[in-house]
Length: 149
Image (cartoon, rainbow, N blue to C red; front, side):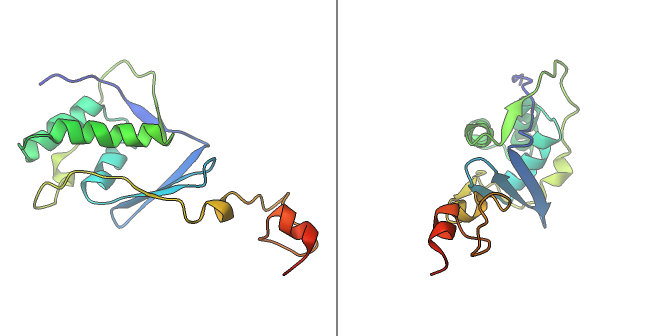
C-alpha cells in the first residue's frame, strides 16, 4: 500500500519532549499544555520524531495488526500532534527507512491516543526571570505586586 511520504520533526523550541519507560511526555511551551503518549502512541511519537513517514508507520502498524481503521487511527494521532503544534512538517523529499516492527511489542492493537493536560498551564507559563517580585517566585507578576497572601 502506498501512502504519502510526509515526515515531521519536533517543533523546536516551542515543544520539548522526553520518553520515559515507553511513555512520551511532551510539553507545548507556548500553550502550557502537556501531553502523554503511551503504548502504540509512544512508539508512533518516537517514529515521528525520528523522521519516519506517516505512510511507513501505517504500513508497519497494519502489518502487525491487520484490523480495520489502523491507517485512520495512525493518521488521526499524527494529526493531533500537529494540531497541538508539537510537530511540524519537514522538507524531506525521500522516504525514510521503514520503522522497526520489533518496537511494536504490545500483544493487541489499541488505537493510539494523545492525552492532553491543562491543569498546570498557569504554572508552566510563569516566566521565572520576569515574573518575580519582592514576594518571590513562583508567583504571577500581578500577585507579586499585591504581596504575599
